[in-house]
Image (cartoon, rainbow, N blue to C red):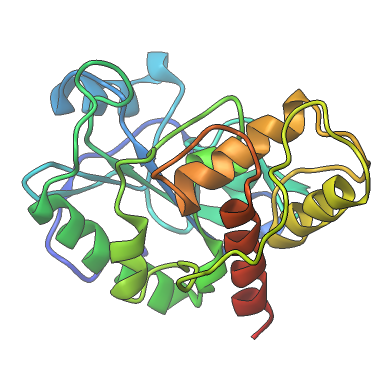
Length: 248
């Protein structure tokens, strides 16, 4: 069994299968549980009725629960895609992070929990050779359907610890704010850049509702202080900075 080299509790899930087509993990996908309690999350993740599972769960106090062997396909991503490829479950390892999620109880992730997520993630990406650009949020691979782990998740802190990417400080050089209803070459360039990073965006010149949703998902991960689906100059500059890091 392939598992973390860290202390963990073993609580086996029942919903899993073989990775399709012999695929190996090249994505680390982070979620929040979105449940009122950790116990309820574990119940959902370990019973047949839930039809969902994950490889790991991290409690708010930093305890790690292992549920599915890393060599197997856990059912955590659902309908999703990245870099033009569907079935993210077959190419990913999923970590569920205990947090009630968006709503009146959505809260910051405790330090102990984040330190455990960092340690677990570093272990996973090291053993599987997962590139920083493929440490992703559930919202990245399922825009509009999922918004977790959300704008309160400290992606910059993870990147500073060597997990994932974070755009370097950017100074937008003018430019215009693109929003739903706009069209033209600037919108086409935005679409190309989002697709080049991995988001599911088709070519075109229209800033439609789907593009707004993808921009919002990008902001949840990479510009959390203002998530409104409008591609202002800062959002565009952060995307361009990430693409430069992607290429290096």
